[in-house]
Length: 342
Image 1 (tube, rainbow, N blue to C red):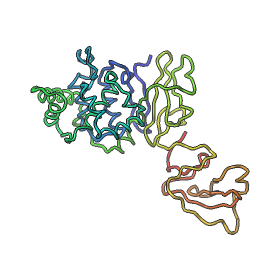
Image 2: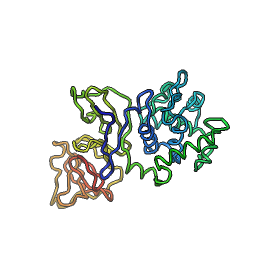
Image 3: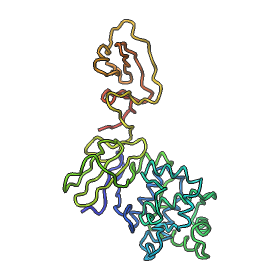
Image 4: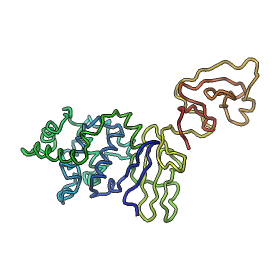
């Protein structure tokens, strides 16, 4: 039985656990909270929250373990986002752009999300972050200042600053997150942390083998994959932007790379290649059968930084990959040097 899903991250990185509870109504625990908090940060959707989201979950509900977290008639979830705050997200113009990004990266259409969905930890965490985006005041550093911020915008109670301070200090002493977490940029986070997002279930083009526990790529989308879990529900994942699911069966995770077009498609080289005129002496022309073979790009015989673009009548035009990239004939594309693709 899988109590959690283990994922190998990028080469050289540590193992990470993906708690099953993040999409389960009533999910609780530090693992789920930390996963959601890290996921929101690493997705680059929001600015650095200065550990506020992580602290807020602990202050508001002790990571969902407080008996009042999932009380009858209240659907704010682990982060305890009141219904008026949830409604403010949908009506605020400042959150519109982020809602669009939530849809594209998390496959969540926030216009259809109900307050009751916040009983799922991922939705409650996203709601907390989206609500923060509607607040014009900058999020302060330090637990003392954040306590005042918490009272002003989350829990208007005279004891709120003290409660936030004491609970945050307790959390920080347990996790050492405040003292040991080195500040990282969004790009640093993407290159060294989780490279995937959790998706809602969708219809697969292939079925999980009966009784199997295995990772399977989505055959129609190189950025998606699933984990089959025998008798447990299948988990669905989406690689972050500029990542694809590895073709190496031993990796089972996302690796840095762009979607590879079909072999008959024009290569996805965004930088403008350096064109050269048709070779005057035709000492080497690999393009003689291009129109028949429908292959209009050929590798250079000795220089991996170059390739030939063939026209319909068999003329060869020598081109150069942008700096730092090499030509890959298998993918008909210039790809970053050192990129590992299955």
